[in-house]
Length: 232
Image 1 (cartoon, rainbow, N blue to C red):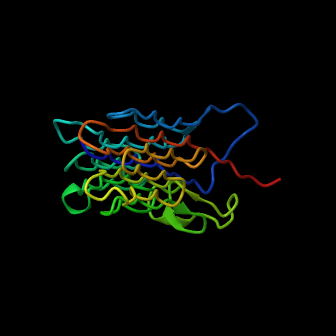
Image 2: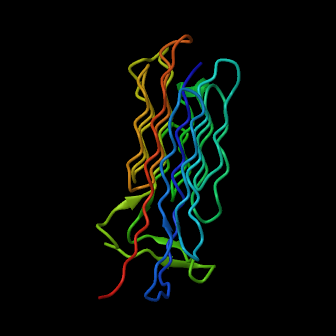
């Protein structure tokens, strides 16, 4: 068994306007997916009443001794695990695809996709969305719009998790770094993956394996966030 794939970030959705009235609205904040030794869980969906649901991030492919484990579909999809697992499929206009495992090249599992970038070949999680960036225009249903700079605090959201590292023959080589925007780093030589950051929707880092007989868990995904900004 080798490294586990990094988890994909939760889907990123921005509406630049939404008429509301004085009433109650159902808002759901998705919980980060739980991590396990082999094939954890996808993250939960986030939603605001009447708007498109942000799909939870796809889990990374697990560490399995007999078969290659593919990353799961999600807002951004998880990276492939073990020797040559493949990344899952992302949700259109919400995120990007996780990368395939590259054990034969650098002993790293695939990385999770982020909100603005695919999982990288060196096990590095895809980058998230930065305030001030150009994003899909969900209000119009087509085209693009600017996600305002300093919308909250100049933050980057929804980075993918890094791929876990096989501990032999280079135990000193780190697992893949987490994507900017709350992605957790992949585990190195028997260390567990780092969890994604809560309230950023980051994917968790994949677990690692120091030997064929022992493997570690990946990191859990970070909880999502729903932000409502309005004039007073």
